[in-house]
Structures are given as structure tokens and as C-alpha cells.
Length: 264
Image 1 (spheres, one colour):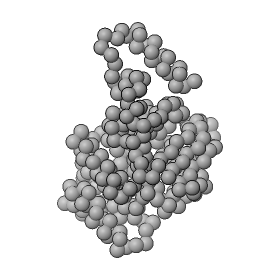
Image 2 (tube, one colour):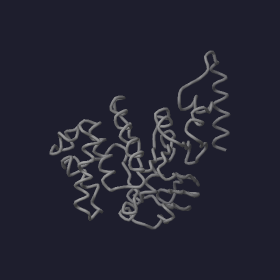
Image 3 (cartoon, one colour):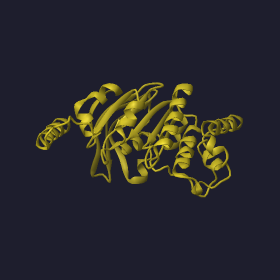
Image 4 (cartoon, helix red, strand yellow):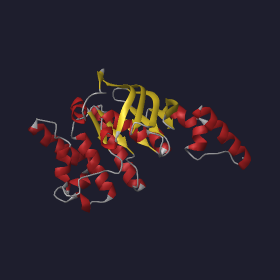
């Protein structure tokens, strides 16, 4: 469904942030894009949704195709109309709008008013806690409730691909479990493809079908999610799992070799 080929993204005509990456998201698939801060994950999502211009960023090279349609020269609104929706990092709800008004913003490109009303009801079925707060300003919601609003707003555009940027950030474990359960339902019941950007590798790889590891703007490792979890470097570097009794000096040597191998 989504095909990224040799994508390069530059900020301010100088800083190369994404360095020739290629990856795919299949129809109805769940793909995790993992990496540390500054790896280029969020920039990649912004390149797909075409909101780079707001931060002086631009696509320097490569192609982004969605259902064989080239997205490179399209506007953010056109990308949404094609069926791509992004839930940004940090939720970014509209504080001075109510829950319902925030959700309706997600349907701004749609003309089918009757179906929009049905979809709004469906969002409240997905997130029952919001159904009792429909007229509350989102500024008064908890972090978890705001994230639910942000995800619901993304779903209201009727996407074929839903891109989620750090949906677990700053949330309690029980809230995270509830949110990911709903995301799984949306994927399974509505066949919406999911592109998930996460720093919580354990959470993401247990949820996704396929995983890509990104470092310094490059894809350095990819594979089926379970296979990626079994990689020794991933266990050590991302999952915090090391063998008992391993000396610190040996760990440092292994870390150096891994970094040299990945970033060469």
C-alpha cells in the first residue's frame, strides 16, 4: 500500500536528516518504525503526510507512493483525501475546542455528513470514556483521554493508512494497553494499515507484524517483528536484555562493533 524508495529529507537546505531509506507498509499490515531520538522517524512520517514545509524541510530525493499514487508533489489535504492520516507526537489536540469538535476536525475533507455522524458515534464506542465528555474542552482531559481524542480524530478521516507517532508517550501502562487494544481493533475490523513510530521497542514489536530499525537517518535492520525481537543487538540495545555475567568491557566492545556495522 505504501512504498518508500530511497527517501532523502533535508532541513533548511543543509541538514540531511533522512538518508536514502526504503520500506513498505502492506495492505492491512502493522509496521513498526523504531529508533532512538533523532533517528529520523518523525521526519519520515511528516514527509509522507507532506507537513515538512512547516519546519523548513523538503524531500531532496526519492519517491513516496500510496496505492501507486505518487505523493511527492501533493498537499497535506490531498494526501488526507487519498486515505493517509497522521496522529502527531504529543497529541496536539485543539485545547479550546470540545471533544466532539476536535473529532469533527478529522472529517474536514469529507462531504458525507450522515456517515460522519455515524463515524462519530463509532469513535465513542471505541473510546467509551470520551462519550461522557463530549462537550468538555480537551484542555481539561487527562493525557490518556487526549491521546484517545487524537487517535479518534485520525480515524474520522476514514484512512486506509493510519500513522501513529509515539502514541504511548507519557501514558500509564493500563492506558497504553487500552489504546493499543483499540488500534488493533481498527486494524482487524476495518483493515486499516498501521505505521507505528515508537521508542518502546518491546511494545511495538509485540504489536506489529513487521519492524524496521532506524539509526542516524538510515534503515539498519528489518524483518518480521518476532525475528527482529530475537536479534541479539536488538535485545541488548533496545530491549535492555543482556546475558548474566557479561563483563562491562565486553559489552562496550560489542556495542562498538554493532554501531560500526549498522552505521557503515
